[in-house]
Length: 146
Image (cartoon, rainbow, N blue to C red; front, top):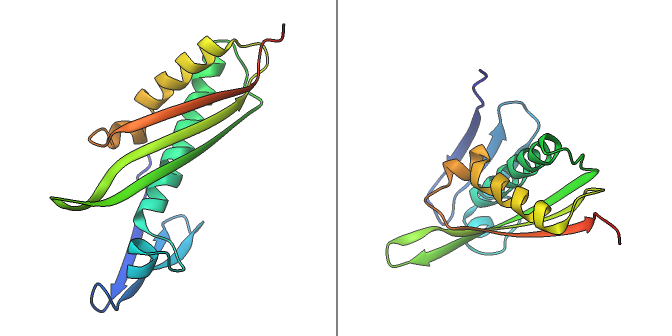
């Protein structure tokens, strides 16, 4: 199986330093800094990249689960909100909120939500982040019509 890589470079101290993060595939390279992580400065941050990975993994797992259950999705859109907060133990990812919308003809809302929850529990990124509370809001945009 393939091994995926990414790299980061950081220069100077935490608060006045800066760096770059790059995916091994070359598909993304971006700058990051103290301000882009702890405040609202320009650039990316590790939590944003974790969110992108989680949203992408979940969407693929959900599409697969829907297809295996006989419901071909037209579109799955997922947002991952990664909360990076200061706690008594220091800074950390305190929770992740997944919000997904699906256009899946012929499915009822109960089945849609059950399959979404299964994808949340079983996508590889969710499993890797199991120590972090993960919530899910699943909205069916198209399904069984009355």
